[in-house]
Amino acid sequence: MGKPVLKDLYGIGLSPLSFRNKKYAHDEELMAEKDAGLLAIYHQDGSVVSSEYILRCKRHLEKTIEKCVSDNTIGKIYKISPDDNLVKTITGTLNLFTNTLEYTNNEAPYTFIRFHLEYDLFKKADNAILDIDDINIKINFTLSVNQEKKSFAINEKLVNLNDMAYAMDYDWYEEIDGPEEYKITINSFTVEVPDDFDESKIGFVLYDILLIMQ
Image 1 (cartoon, helix red, strand yellow):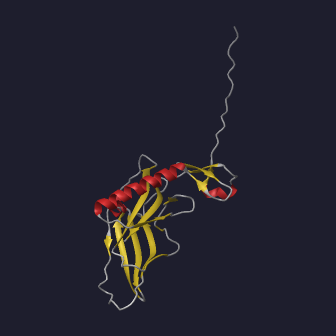
Image 2 (cartoon, one colour; image 1 turned 60 degrees about the vertical axis):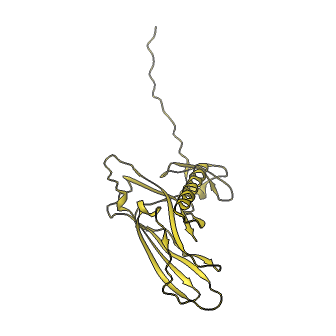
């Protein structure tokens, strides 16, 4: 009996195209958000559809509604996507809003505002030091009534933000006879991480932001 012949074996690895390179994708091509481990399908109209992302956002909305009902802070809910590529990878301190967002109500004054974030924070290396208390969220917004306005600032730890609702203060405004227009303008939404935040050791992915107002 002859001796077995040993041969070198070679494998081929295929990697889906990254969301960031979707301009190079073909219709119905499988893509991946590699920081979040998220798969999606690219469509010819430029949209990227992910059943994982849709399910995650649906669960986030359900959790938020339950929280608002429990806290008696039921209001209109707006979904804000922090990135055109479905999710936003946080690599350092960053203002997520490149433009201001405006919301107007001609029926009644706004009574509160709150924000709910859906995110993942995880270790990429065994020696990574991860302390969620070191991450802060700073939000600056303006409350306007007709031509008068006042600026407000929220400075909250990420771990606490989803539990908070912020009451509106109108002590600065003197009521007038006639119609009133109430407007909230969100000027900035900044994620602050420590100076020694190392993206090679810690993954921080933001899926969506829910804004609740009444």
